[in-house]
Amino acid sequence: MAEPATELTLDSASLLAAEEHEVAIVGRSPWYLAWRRLRRNWVALVSLGVFILIVVACALAPV
Image (cartoon, rainbow, N blue to C red; front, side):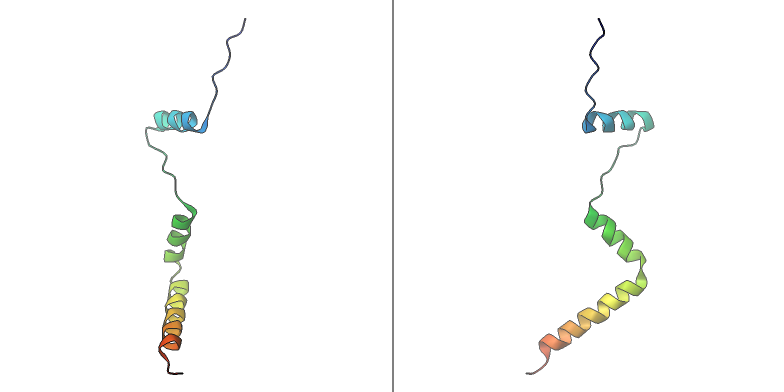
């Protein structure tokens, strides 16, 4: 009779991959990935700074 196969879960798969490459798999959140991508785009960062400056000026403007 054949032996049942062991169940492969995400935890066991990451452990197998870590053993194979001897490097731990590091998960990255979507927010971290988006921030890392945004930091490389200096035009977007300058535009964000200008936008924040306009919002602050509007908030402090006399009515």
